[in-house]
Image (cartoon, rainbow, N blue to C red; front, side, top):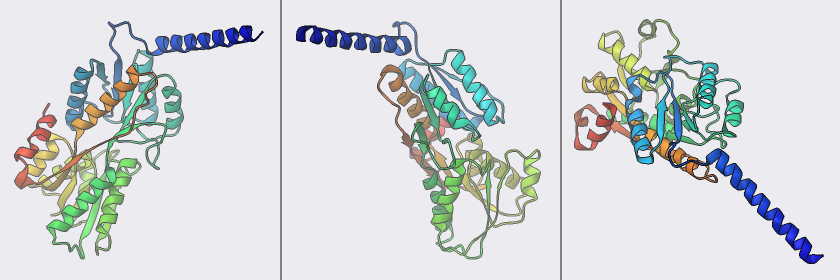
Length: 324
């Protein structure tokens, strides 16, 4: 009886191991010829602000021998449209997805369903305004620190005294977690400074963006919290329609660097978009090749650029990635 019971337990164990092995083969196995496919979903993918990011993706795909595809999207996607794109990519054979998330109702539940089927990596964005969910790994820059770096640049340029200065804060959308963290970092780093934020607005969905910015009340300083807003402020300032305001901001496109080089932007905080792309795909590849590996959160660096040192040896690499 005892021998029979031991044999039964042994057989059960063997069967369980075979089932696990079968599942692993069905969902994660590769025949040695087929490469893993990763779809990357970002809004306005053809915009130059994504050049360094896509270069990082390409280099990681080459190093990891992965088939990577950046999905072509329109300039403005709603959260619902982004969900449809993600579902479509999965149906068309994507083994994993990298997503710059657009906030919206039902996004988290959709990603939870998706994650049960394929690995997911978010970039920069998080599921909710409360920050990155523990359920979804994020490759990101320290958003709060970049906002604080802008405040430090201001204080440096004004010898630590901003008394009486009027500020305007420009962003694509105040609803995004990234922007809220950048603005928080800016505000807290300014601390007890006697400055007045005259306006804080999102301009992305305005039909006439330039006219909208021109019509805003006059301020001494415009702080742009993302690349789109920075280039918009730069364009308005270049046309002498920003009422003499000086521009500081966060950006990572060739246009942003142009406005810095022409002294229209006084200081540029640049997230390392190459590393954002490279690290997100590299980390995701680990989970594609190991059944038990869960992608981990990654943080990439940022740089502070000034006109006088823009083309220094230390900055050559990041400028090169923007032009790829």
